[in-house]
Image 1 (cartoon, rainbow, N blue to C red):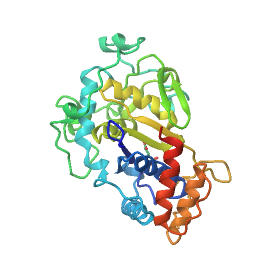
Image 2: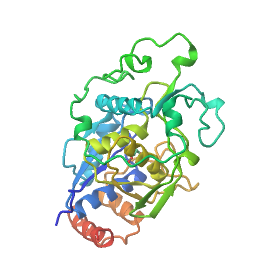
Image 3: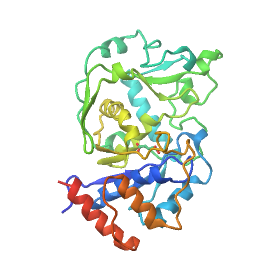
Length: 335
Ligand code: GLU
């Protein structure tokens, strides 16, 4: 029986290279969870960090998924076509006095949480600092995003729904000081503990203000930061369940906090184990993990399946792999 609300899962690869054994573990887990819960499974290409995008990697990733039998239920989306949504969320936070421009360079900052150097002394900041926000009523994202026309122009780093008097938003040349040109925008974090239940790791909590501090939602180079876009996209796409690698566990409290500030419901989460290389580092494109060998798709899936803690399946074809894996996943993870 389908769960209620209807399950929507997603896989959100960054197109910085083809899928490798590590990214397949996250893809497989999110796909199986969606199938085991009779849900929809979406693919979102997270190409918002354009300097890291490798041209053509998105197409390769989509081909890899299809070759492995991971079939999406709606057309994939690309973040670079969704700037209007991010600009709208940013404007909303700005109207609520939850963002401020930050001129600190990385070199100027000590390691650890942002010390609040550029935190404004204005009314909004002092009103927010030091108390936990009352939970905004969860809403589906319809009203928030209803009037947005999704931009399909190539990203020039400037959102198309500009705020008129904000140089960082308007696309007009900013004031002629080097500091103003380099402003990033930080989200003003309120004090309090964020708690969530991770379906793999159990209950987690983080004091975002103490652990991270006010974090960047728009970068100094004009690009939207991952923390903002992932929250906006998950809400906009109706995602109910995030299943992803454990390297993102540390971002979850931030995202939940941000979602609440935007009046959005934050999905359930499950963070699955990472594959480590011989040096104990996460297998990643940055560490030159080899692309999946699609001459042996079943073997790729078997290895990802075993990395998730299951015993190798005695199956000879992809068609036989999927129903067995889905049934076993459902027995272990679907109540
Ligand atoms: N784009 C991220 C990555 O490839 C995943 C983000 C997410 O699942 O929230 O690591």
